[in-house]
Image (cartoon, rainbow, N blue to C red; front, side, top):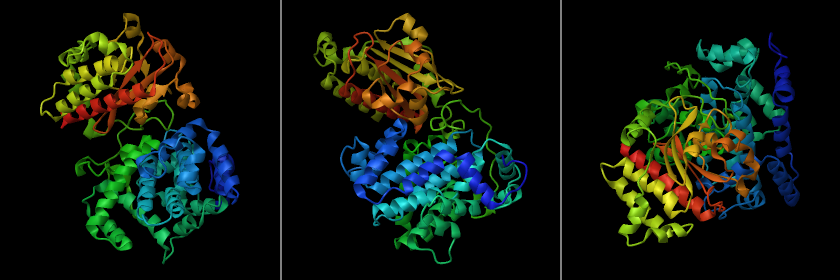
Length: 547
């Protein structure tokens, strides 16, 4: 293995292709070499994606997300996604996901996480600069921007002496990445990226962008501007370097500075949201959100701005969590979110408890007897009334958190017809979930057994750390059935259930759980939709109490 001495550029390219990432190299080349025959290449791409159930699920999620909303209605199959969104779009979505998965699968350094965040943000910005272009050109610009620092990210993602030397020089000695690469590898990162792009046949736009031409083409300009903006954006949207880049973007797009600024902020918000779907949830907090105050933006994402070293506060040391790279955050919650759990604990009075039967009481106030409420699997009218009441509470300046959560949990149990409902919060070390409230037909044995770990790969870890709603035991989750672990079976005693994250101020702080383990009734789409809506309302309400 190449660890002790400098080698030639060709040596490093071959090492990355044959030893470090052979599976990824093969996948990239397969996707880029699919036949030009439309029917044949659609079937080949579909087959390639379907080999990975997790990838299949995520591609469908992105295909149905806000970015492609209205393109083709509800998309439930990969073939339909290719037909409606285009071959290039789906190919590059799947390619992007696999690249991010590969780079994030180890325990990345702080600089590497910042560079991954910058690359994803840059790719979203570059694509957003070509709103009138054809979809295939937009996607080529997206993937080219994402891969602009591919060699740097690939080398730093390795867990060996070379990557440790590189990371030390960059993070501790504040050496520029390409200078660190010259010291350790004997060649620059961008030289390796260019050689890899040629060998892997990654397209002319990326090749031209890496060559940094004096007169770049329109797509290449978008790539370079997106990259430049991503490197300075963590300084804050009102910072002079950011304004300077936005001025360039405005000139490039022939729009006013105000319009360009508004567009890049909207794209940053979209990038923040889409990072989860693409498997980059681990670095999501490093993508600057346009709503975040300037003094709360994560500055370490711009450690190196247009080749000039920047004085940045050193990254805080955090304890990594042993769950899949695509699921776990690599740093502790950012400062703006600290204190949320304390606020909720104070409002709830701490400790576990049973709620009074408020949904039933609410139904009685509406002139409905309890029997009429609990017989049906879903009481849509009661559910609607409860959601209206929660909305009213959100609008109040001083909310009774207990009353609000009382309505949410009783709504899940009584209106939606779920047997057992649990609300839990993350522990202070974020390694487990601590149950706070139970509702429905629960006994002491279930309460004592409800012990959920977040530092292992399971349904709750994915839901909380990736901000995902899950219907475990459903056909849609067949490819991810492994997330229901033996430990979860021991804790829950049942295989079909709902899990939804509790998201407060864009941060997942806990989860709702619900099942029909007592009645043994199968869960249905109406229940899933109602459960998720109530979980979302709870998060909105708790966010409102923080304001």
